[in-house]
Image: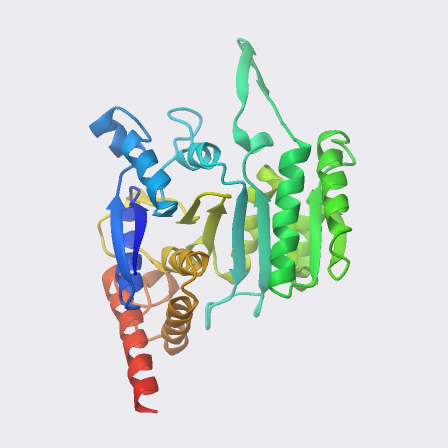
Length: 342
């Protein structure tokens, strides 16, 4: 079977780290047909569109995409490519697992958190306008439909994967209507899953609690903006955004992506760490049902970090992006030989 996948290399270090991830994915022995398309400033220079129609049509065909980082201008320029793709394909669930790799220096070993973030509404949607010069208004839209849908996604994941607790994170003490609606929907869904412990924490207190003791949490269920902030905070527990994968999942399509930036200052130097994109590819494999191949990559990646012989510079090694991918592939191949000789 050949898996047809849309590939969005991104910009900055994006093409380098996605190329590394593609090589690792292909080394599993699976067959892929990649439909590669640009997005963002480079796409605009070529097509006069930040998200070309060819890219949208590709995702509609394949239903699955692997995406590298795309630069989002700050306080001006085009709107976020990520936000636009999530809205276009109704990718309502942002899924980020937070788990340590071996020997990455961190204050918190053995973290195992799942972040489930609503992806289509709330303040992060960027619905804003200028009322009069010097006055702007941002709209926070919360609906029962989206709140119920993301809560059900979280609890279904917990049930299927033997997770024990789900905490809904909110600011309903102040935003009593919007966050209050999110909480009411979460509570209603939680009643349908009596085997899973349900809790609620205010978002600012959650940040403090996470820093004091992240082990008290199992799964966090959050609105869009809270999820964006807290998922980055939690990434620090395992070494930073360079190690954390991300998935944007809808009923029809899914886009898997590294959650770090495009790092244009180191682009083209073969020094970027491709781990986040490789782990995102691993999530993609699970999504399409290739669990054995996903396990191969996970085991090989952990072996490379455990041995520490060919790591990238950001974690104290000397390997380049391509050399790191080579080593992960070698670890997969050596594991296959070991199994064959048993």
